Image 1 (tube, rainbow, N blue to C red):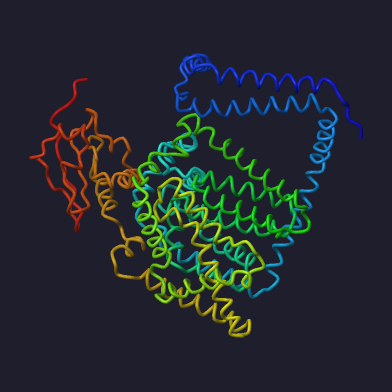
Image 2 (cartoon, rainbow, N blue to C red):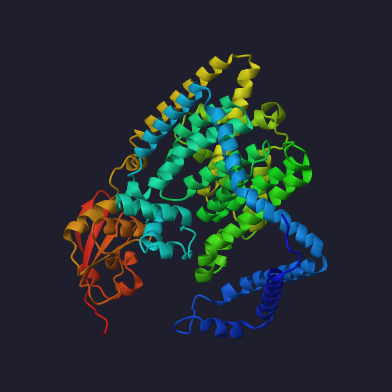
Length: 604
């Protein structure tokens, strides 16, 4: 095959590179006012409102980087034509061979995964666990809609795909989850279980993916024990029944760990693509994918440093794959979030007001917050399970950390690097975040704990079948404790089982009694849930925004003894009603619904 040394194509390429460089310099040197006036001409109304100063400033540096890269590429192409031609030939051959290589590597990857299912006992155990996990999770998918779930539905999913893929004014919008939830609701109808269906699926698949990850990193017995934990522990049930992206985030993080473990042993382009797409999907779910992704990349780097990669890679080749995989992830994430950057800017994604508000004012307070949140996360992971599980998991973790090289063939400790990256990133932000943020790390924690327990059982010279029997027994006991927890008489657990919440009872009542002339409000902590349930029971969302003249009365819903009618009223409504005429029209336990006439109307 011959390639032309120089032709019209290269002239076009050079002109394009020069154009990029010149335009980037112009964009960097010209003021925002000048750039804004030009950009506005591209809009139909001569005013592109989304192009704000907060969009312009970070875009300015990015475009300068593209311009400098174009200039460097132009210099290389001009001064080293032979190397340029050689690179082109290699690239052309690689592109032509790509389809067949991907096909072959996909077969190799599937062949490697099929090995896990050669033992029918493992396959049967895993399928039974997934059935048990499905049953446990379905039992709480109709629990009351929470504040965050209601806010996500009303502000992102209900307005449609355009809004949920461009609006990020609050990090409630876990975009990829919101997309799945949008289509689930469109297909199955607007009910709590349909809203939570993507989380349910993620929680169920997490059982099998956890098995794969632990088996690949440690051994099959550790994988079986971890799968039993993920299937039955209450914390995994809770996140699998919440219409938020955390279960999906944990699934993608664990999948990434599994892929990375295989990539160290096998050179497989198809698997590298899966690794890249899983990472990008994690970022598109929640930007805090930065924690597990950085940990995995650092772990892979040190595995490369200690020569733990397969002989199928040369030293330089593995580093090349690692570098370009990271580059492609960054490019994909930028492309996915581009609509958000254009509409709401960069800061809403990477440095939101929520993160800034969580930042501690001093390092001492940060330390206290870090210790407190770590303790609360650890307690959350063990809540509702057998009391002894807390001690067992801690012992197992310490054994694995202390005897890591005897528990696995890996020299680099993934748990250590994960913990190191989490601590470093939180220190840089000086903001710890809520316990739900760290849920993605629960499978890693329990994987290392399971490996330690299996190591101790092997140390006692127990036969493999005996250890398998102990794993099954542990899983059954854990299932018993989870069922006991689910059938507890505590109000919180009863609501998990689908007991109608106070705010839903109010919405049911209003669905039968409110007219189009009645506005509806509640205390601020109940308001997103109220909006979801009023819409669910056929009341237009517009009736929860009472600041106009079409309403003649307002219903005020209070669900706590501490709630006050006047405080629940919106500022635009409080001065228009007759509080002395407030009438209690419905009550149930702590629920109170008042109806108040509106007596003052705005001048139209």
